[in-house]
Image (tube, rainbow, N blue to C red; front, side):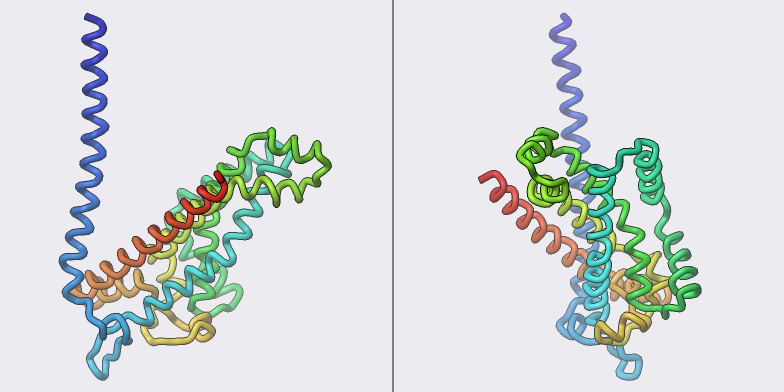
Length: 283
């Protein structure tokens, strides 16, 4: 009797797990299907390779695509060394439990703050106090603060998974602390560090609220240097402009489809790269 009841409960649990997984996949496929179905009609070669011109009455998102890649590059260039360095300090060097707890609590608190608050703080500090103009530099610096908790948390968890025997063995062989971290700990934790960077990149690509106040709404094609101190709209900001300000929902769905394609492509590339690293480390 007890065995039959236990098997029945296990069957219900498996059914709930499989049902939840199927529902999640169905919701994802439905969302992707709706966006691609409504968005592919607006995607043309001119739409992807030109810029918006109100005089010629044309719409193009080439500047917005470039600005999205620009701000991802700029943000990760600054945030990655800072985030990884902070995680290394918390894991390998900090010897005060209260200080570690305080910093960890601060990082977790930053994770839960709405992104629009980061935008307001970024506008106040970077544009008004430091005197930066609206552009990719102010927006990138704001996003650095936004993604740092993600990078720090994932890197720290990856470092903590490295067995202490690796540390003790390296130090017993006469290795210095930094040499041990650089040659043994970081390579072992590389997959977790890359995961944090991938998550941070995904949040940057999909961010709009923090950029509305710092990067601006500019749709004109500019070089990287010019866009640092000039108004520049990423794909998500452009989507907001066309959908909310101008009511051009067909264009907005087209931008959403392009944004999803870029995100999926980046995830596939990151997954392939991570799997190759795992294969090399295991061999």
